[in-house]
Image 1 (cartoon, one colour):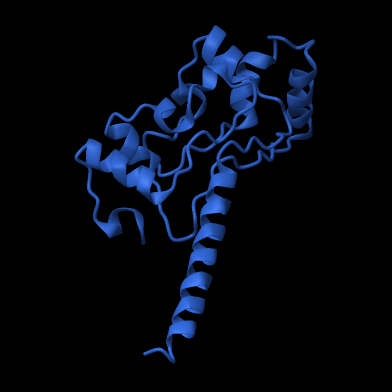
Image 2: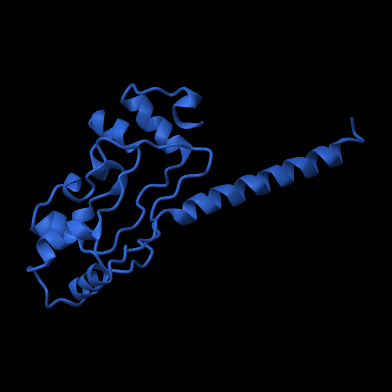
Length: 169
């Protein structure tokens, strides 16, 4: 047994180190706020104008992904509204060039985890529970770690399934 003790300690040390690296990566992601091609303002649209999340993210109640709106939806208002503002002028440029806007992803789950927006919306989970109060975020940032423990504790508090296959496919 004494002969294997150094090997066991080295394996334990390497395991702890790997765990710390994985957790550090997860913690690092919380708070990220990537620069977007257009500085879209949730405080104006969701706050001042009172638009519901589902006005722009129209597929959230019927699709696994929330998706971002097409430029055409933005242009329903911005053909006439706030056309002198620089960010709206950028938007209009995308529209005129018939180019999609390549938004930068803010939330990214690991490859082995599956999240379905539709199920959470149908269960009555408010968008702000995971995404924070977007009405106050000048720039969208990740406010939750989305680590497994956080998700499992939410599922337990709501009596939602905690079976592994619920989120891991």
